[in-house]
Image (cartoon, rainbow, N blue to C red; front, side, top):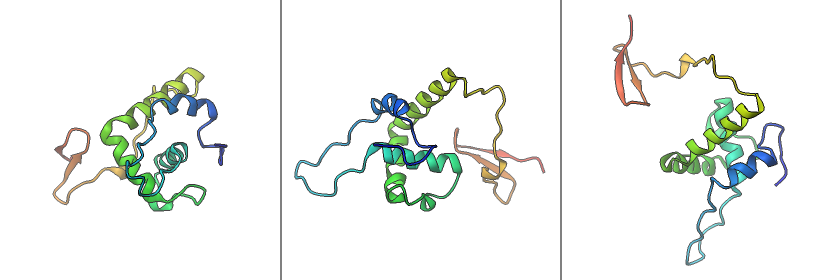
Length: 131
């Protein structure tokens, strides 16, 4: 599949990731729609993760956003998305394009309750804010 954007996966990146994303199984009764191209789905997911835009704002060059959102949820639950992101990070580090000596987190993405508590998605605990 040719790249449709300069920020889509390169052929070399896809060659590495193709092994990590198994081909979805076909239904035995042959019913339902065929699965969308895995590379196109991953490009759409990475676009959302890179831009921070809502799923519904995925550009028209990618198929329907519901497909990406559903597949993203499946891949996160199965642990496959972590492997994909780690493989991309390793590839970037080898190329010299990734240096994580310093990182910034966007504070607008933290949910704060009205009583001054922050819920951490990572460890599922509440923390009191300094007010």
